[in-house]
Image (cartoon, rainbow, N blue to C red; front, side):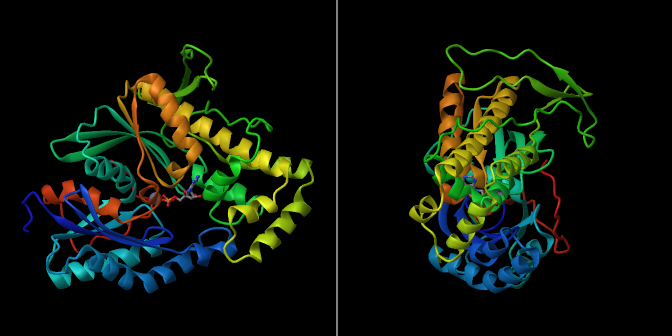
Length: 408
Ligand code: KG4
Ligand code: ZN
């Protein structure tokens, strides 16, 4: 199929962080194959992603992962229509592995190559799956929360003809939400990545046991030159489970900002650990879990006392409430009809349930990707590339990785 025609099979490649992934997607609406090689085992001993090791692992995995995605799609290199690859944001060395391989393939096969922003990919994971379910009636305005290990961003997503554009109306001032999950898990001796294990352990503790306060942003972000104003909170009927978010930011040209901050809660957990003398029990848990090849939920539970489970559960509840309250405050301000919640942290059960419940009260639709498409994958890259394919928006062969790439 030639560029300019409406149906297209796109081979997507993603290598921005610690997953080497490839996928084939038809016309941004049907997942044909989806392969993800995770590097979790490599990074686990370090409690986080080690950039040099990530690049090395991508180099090892990229050829077999791409080949497998093609084999499983039933396509050949010759009869795919275009290639798509993540340009950024992400780890420069990791991005370059995917980009170099995609360029070499595109050159050898004489196929067009599309450069995709990873964050746009997370947003298109939602669109891909909604279209696949037959839902083609997304109501606008759309607000997307992209919440992962590296990002906590709010975007107003707009569509004009086939092409999409994005306005950032909020971001984290310090740690991303997933980073807070990972750092707290590491601090408590629970290993890496922290999100999935905290998610599963949280239902075994008391979410109200420990009171954490997340900092409300009152000071302007030096990067955006904003000034702070306060607005009276709108009370909803019944007994709202959350405090209404009142501190919000106003930029000089009347664009309010809805920013997040998650480094404080990590410090608060550390302080709790110190004041309750938990260091010794954390160390023995760390050792016990490190001795088990693939610890299961029972292993984690056997190594966590009630106090620790309460701490974990309270941490998660605080994170979820803050993400939901701030996102809904932004959604109300912009009269949003539809919410997308995407990125690794969108896999979180409590976050999904809370968003579903609270968005329903506001009459907003809320969509998440399935769990496999919440975390990093290449199907979302191939899906985000489709509107660019239709617009003949192809990358020149001299483009490079953009570690800090912004989404516009
Ligand atoms: O989107 P992703 O795979 O990579 C980035 O682009 O960062 O997100 C990975 C992040 C990690 O911080 C991980 O701990 C978090 O997503 N995560 C979760 C859950 N599953 C993954 N956080 C909370 N609950 C989960 N179930
Ligand atoms: Zn991601």
